[in-house]
Image 1 (cartoon, rainbow, N blue to C red):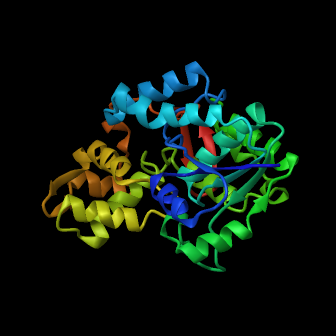
Image 2: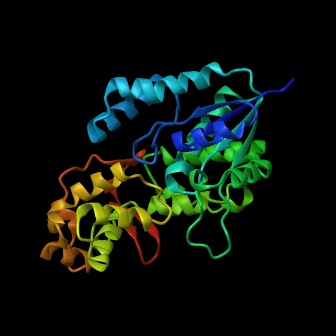
Length: 310
C-alpha cells in the first residue's frame, strides 16, 4: 500500500494542514535559500555549514536554534524513506520558489522512486496579489490539494537544472533560460526574473528591493520605521520576504535616511533614488551572495533587463 508525505513552506501552513486531516505526515522546510550563499548538494555537510555561517553572521541565528528548527526537521525528512508519494506545498514568490527547487533537487537524488506533486497558489488573470497558501481558507487548501500538479520526470530534471544554475557563480546562465513554459512550474519564470533584479542596477547601484524601499519611503511618507517596514511588506511584489529580511536591508540603507521618526530620505538618498548619483560609494561589504553569485560582481540593466558582468 502506498503512503504519502507532505513538505510545507513554513510553520503557519504546517499548522493549518495538520487540522485538515490529510493522509500522511507533514515536514516543514525551514530555510530561506533565496538569501546568502547556496551549494548545489542540498543536505550535505558543506551545504548546511555554508547555510549556518550565513544565517549566524547576518541574522544572529544560534547553533542550537539552527539544529533544533532546521536540521532536526531535515533529519526527519531523511528518516521518511517509505513514502512513495510526496506532496510539496510552496508559494508563488521568490522565497518559496528557490526553496522548492532545492527540495526537488534533494528528492531527485534521495527519493528517485517517489511520485512528486506540487500544490501552489493559483494566479488569477491580471491579478497583482495572489493569495498565499498560508492565507488560504481550509476549503481553498483542500481544493488546491485536490487539483495539485503531478510532476513528470522532465519537470523534476528541469527544477534540478535551474537549482544548479541558481547556485552557479554566474547569473547570466539563469537569465538565458527561455523554456519555462515547457514545464509545469507556473510561477518559476516570475521568481527568476525577480531574482535577477536583485543585482545592483546600472542606474544607481541599488537593486530593485532597495530601490523599492526608497520609493515607498518617499511616496508613502511613513511616520515610523515600523510603518515603513509594513508598507514594504505589503508592496513587495514577488519576493515574499519576511520582516527580519527587510529590517536587515533597511539597516544597510540607513546612511540614505536622515530620520526614521518620521521616515525621511537624506539628500544623498534622494539623489541616488533619482539616479543622479550612485550607491556604489556607500558599499561596505562586497561578499554578499545571491545563490552562488557575488551580488556586486554583476550589474542589472533595467532598460534591457539584462545582466552584465563587472
